[in-house]
Length: 229
Image (tube, rainbow, N blue to C red; front, side, top):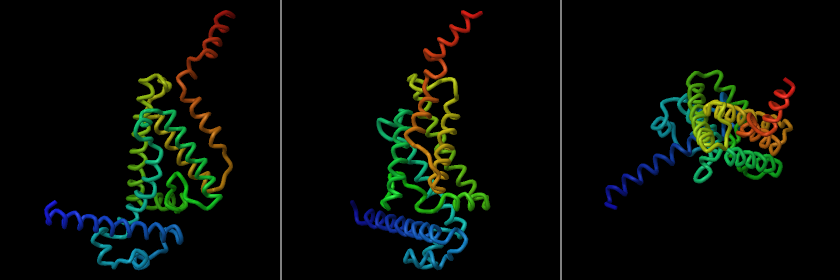
C-alpha cells in the first residue's frame, strides 16, 4: 500500500475511534445519570477528548443522542437477525433469539456480559422516555425498527416460500409482531417481570407454523363439522 493510502487509512481509523469513544462515553454517562443530566464536558472528559474534537463529529448534543440511540438499539435489533445459513430460517431465528434471552437473564444474575447486546446498560425505559420527548430521536428509533421489521419480514417470506412458515399472514406483519415482541421482552427484562423464554419460543413457533391453520386437527374439526351437517 502506498504511503499516502496508509496515511489516509490511519486518519480514517483515528476518526472512527474518536467517534466511537465519544458514543461509548455518552452511553456510560446516560446509563449512570439519565439522558438529561450529563454535560458535554463530562462526556468529553470521560472519552478523553476536547469539545473541539466533539464538534468535529457531532453538530450538537441532539446529534450525539441520536447516535447513542442508534448504537444502543441498533445493536440489539440486529441481534434478532440470524446470519449465514440461518438467515433464511425463521424457526432458527426465533430459537436463536430465545436462547440468547435465556443466556442474558442468567448473565444478569451472575453479573457477566450477556449474549444479547442489550442497550449498552441504559435502561430501556430511559431510551423510551428520551424517544417520546424528542422528534429526531423518535425518527431514529422508527428507522431502526423499520430496518429490523424488514429484515425479519424477509426471513418470514423465505419461510413462506419454503412452506416452513404459515402463508396466511403477510410476511411484513410477522416481522412487525416479532420485533414488537422483542421490545416487550426488553421491558420485561428491565422490569424484572417473570416470563418463560423457552415456553414463549414454543408458543411463537406454534403460531407461525404452517400446520396451525390447516393441520390434521383443523382438518378433523372440519370433517366432524361436515358430518354433523
